[in-house]
Length: 424
Ligand SMILES: *Cc1c(COP(=O)(O)O)cnc(C)c1O
Image (cartoon, rainbow, N blue to C red; front, side, top):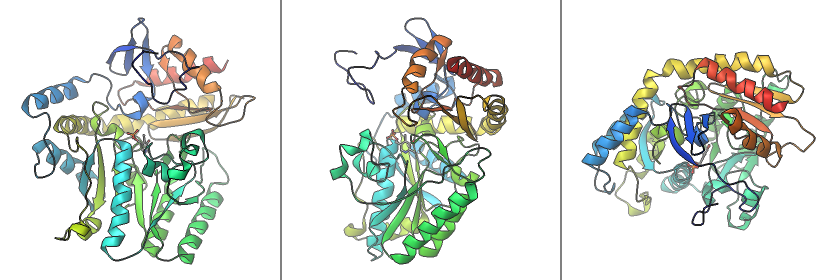
């Protein structure tokens, strides 16, 4: 470990030293020791078009020369306006008000605060959020409150987190015979909750289609449609945390489009800048925005970050968005490449619960340890994969692939071959 750095998400004493990266090109990272590894997880799910993409690099360079940053209260600029226009043009048509921040956790904090205040602005006492077990919404306290509890990450801070209502997440996989039953059970619980306590719940917060950090747990489009329908009956806000699922990951531009569901708020970050700069956005419906659109300081949303709407980030976002439109065929067809490979390997005795959504594929690895985040197979794979030329980072015993969209079909095939080699 470097003498001046405190590495994130790292058990400080027993972890191996971090690998030093000197450069990146396309889907590959070049390590200081000369190894070249294929980035199969898009560098913590942010990179869309490959590392060092010249188009995004140029946009950043040009914007930095023109205007690197400016306060975003009382001032605005073209990159912020253009990026907001581009993103909202693809979202459901009532989602028109984009609030900038700078990371996924803050995008979620903004969504929570906006929903909470929205109900006060309209004179209702709705103060409790409904969320799902296994959820991950970020590492700040508000985002943690609506995320999974009862693990090393959250336990320490439990007293600082606010109370929420938790529903089971109906995770499913390819060939799961019980999917509809699991989903219907959860929908029934949701209906009962809302029915018994009318006017209590501010909103339901969820990662649509795929719970990321919770283990790439997937649910169906139909489930989201049912949640949406129930929410509508009871007038509760639906908040989609698309920090991971946004920008093509699910095989459509956004998970809400893939599921044909119209949430009231959507949180975006990670892929928003193509993985080049920190940037985030919380997009709210016109209806919510209008409840803040008054002269009353009490009904005003008093929230900002120093780097809100950073012009360099927005310029990267615009360049990345245009590349995303050009590469629609790439993120749409990746599912068939994963599918072919999952069929090939899913009967391996050490694998189960193969699942797939768009560009993201996952499987559970079986060994003699308990399944879950602390399964030591993750450390083994992390350690051995660079020697095979890959960056894999399993979530406990969950092995997943989420490469940038520029990878080739044979590169994806190679990832599965490497997994088989590691299993043996
Ligand atoms: C990563 C992630 C976050 C948190 O984003 P940060 O930029 O790491 O704060 C929130 N929600 C989801 C679904 C995520 O995957």
